[in-house]
Length: 260
Image (tube, rainbow, N blue to C red):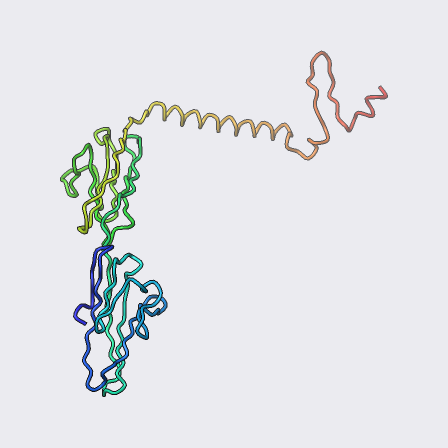
């Protein structure tokens, strides 16, 4: 085989080369197989099989596939059998890679964030082959990958833009572009990210209020326990406020009270 690896753009034709010479056998048997988790025939007994029927042709032992897609990508094996020759079997493998240009990436940009917080913007194209690399833009200007004293970091392979401590200066409209050298780059639509100041006074007031509520709740629990509200006899007795001479009544002395 002249080309153990073949790369071709999606929807174009791919040629899988297989060359051989025989000594005596004029009609060697030629078979093509696709090697995935399972082995399936591509060409057998002079015919193309399954999804290759009607969209492939063979010349000698070289196969040409028409309008390849991602389902055609993978490893192929050409096997030539010549029973009348000294070497009765020869084979070669060809790997087909189908190149896919970038698709419009999905972008995750928060609409708002608080100053000083950790913020991540994400960009992803799951379809391009080879895998895309990513460029982030702020207000239509590309953000450099490496910039001295930058408030952010960019992983161009994963498409993640990270602000460890975002500031008001980081507010703006963001979008990203995916590219892989196969076709033109693709961009998502821009989204504006607003950065708001953290109201520290309100935060402190909220923390103090929460602490006060927790303290009052704990104090109430202690008082209730000391007055026996959580004792076993609580379910059998009740209390009437001592107002205008009202007396304490319980299920234990109710009978005696009735005879007074």
